[in-house]
Length: 149
Length: 149
Image (cartoon, rainbow over all chains, first blue to last red; front, side, top):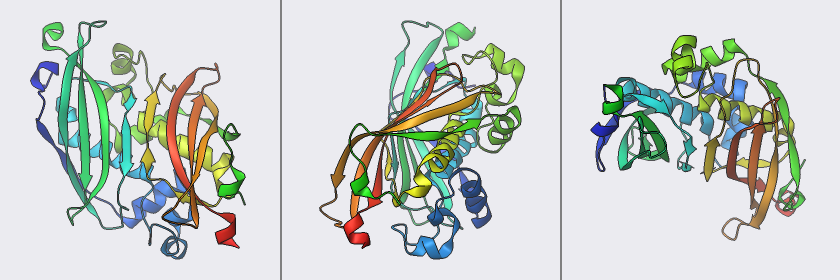
């Protein structure tokens, strides 16, 4: 189990690979983001996206699963208070195979809560062509090993 | 249809109300964010969240639907390049009824793309107790009325 003390700046943690299907794009859009360019091939081809693409919120949700399966499930995560910066850099298309990493920017122990430390990450998700499709800066709280003992 | 020219700083646009069910929280978490505090009542009660709570990515996805139903479906949206700031301020619980607004911070026409303008919003989502649970700063691109004519 990875605790706060096990993170250090520069570390790179792999995200799990994830294939994005047309069915998943359409199902997510129908539930949460029914803008025409996420639901309809013709409307999408006329939009800035230039073709059917996943909702940005679908991409961030997929990222979450990629992070969980990649490394977070074996870490003592206490959750996150937010995202400092979210960039949807390229459309995510049906059939795209996403991969990526979480890079540790810095670590800081909490003064207010001695059992916790916060690790700031840059998360990067890329498609099978090597294009970064999503990047985020995100602090996550972890239990400290001492407090856990 | 609301175009770029129809937005001005200080405007407040209402988000649609949305009830968050336990079933929806569990279904989203199982698919995208299976951390114990989003799936299991006992684990959640021992976590910083103090009880079962929606994944932050579920909350942002619900926000997207609240914005679509509230005002975006009748606007000439061209999508968004990202979120400048996302803050999960309070847990979202089973049975919570969310409401909120998008507040226009500023508007700027694009020099590079004369058919488009970008509107920066602060989005705020609150629960039925009046507590803000989510706030975001988010630029969205809209078609200009002239270009549309």
